Length: 499
View 1 (tube, rainbow, N blue to C red):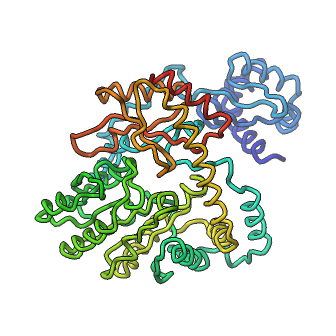
View 2: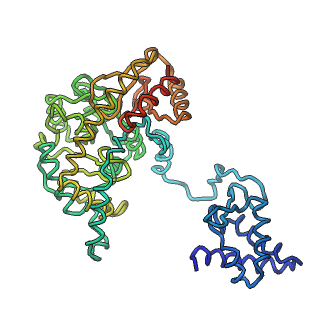
View 3: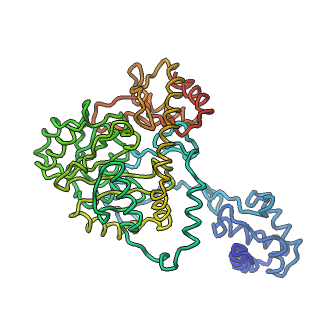
């Protein structure tokens, strides 16, 4: 028998015993009340498939007519619905309690429970800083590569091969830092693409950049410790460090990257970490000069600080003029190098990595063991093969070519805007920044983004990327996930709202 059916029948039988004590003269009413009670008490949840009338009749040893009548009453009250091919399913809004009154789930009496920790409260308070938008819309959501060109069949074939030959021993717990084949493949990939040479034991495989930052921050930061961040920067980076109760020190950029002059003014605060995106600054696209990278390393050495080199979209930003990474220039092992496959392949892949200074490996590994444990070995094994078979390099080449084409088309259509201008016309990233031609308030920017969302168009706020008070209003738009044949229509819809 269907497992769901068996569960449902057990719950219904239990409720039926209570109802039978009331000795209602009509059996179908008794059964109706029993099932209704199960639904209202959420013992049978929303969308749960109920037993077929024939099956339930046999189990309860009553006529099928009785079951049918009971189901009809439940349908009249819209507690269940009949779906073709699925039978009867529960259709119950559990914001209504058994007494028929509405519950306000947002109201909680916190005095009845232990107090939430200060760090727990901090994460709650800063949750709104994170960019979280509808998963349904790809136009013009930043952070998305051209999803439609991902080689799904190649990935599927590699995954099928993995499961065909995997040994049972590989289904056990795995090392938290990642499987050796992937870590070695990443080493080779970074050596070829970024001239980065490291021991594969320094690499930790994670689900993405935010997890890397969580592990680093939790390992390094005590409440009140100072962290330098580029201003502007990713709202998610801002949110995470603020949530772990670091004191944020925003530093502006000039044409060469983060300002060392402004950083020197903060030396007396003994910052522990500085987070930078040197290959392709988010969101403005500034590329840190070679000279500035060397100055940053000198600053870190002098101040006994660590550099987090978030090599955001380096494959796009460095595809023509490849400037050495900060990590490859570092002679004192002060740089934590971060990369991700989520922005190159697709976000649902959930695979990233970081190279750790040797003295940090044990501490970060211990934290990983206590929290996320490890990334799925199947995904790691397939990613390793994806790199080894040269599929990653081929896909990156296709991604850049398609993105350049869509970038050109996006700019062509967007130039018709009367109220906004694209800040940087060059192809430097998988998203662009559109600035308003006249000064608007932050509330006005928020209203425009809301109207775009209602039209199934996603845009991120430029002003929310700023930590300090000197905020600039604008929109961050990811153009390359929209197919060329749809892009023109989507841009026109965008412009009909922003003007």
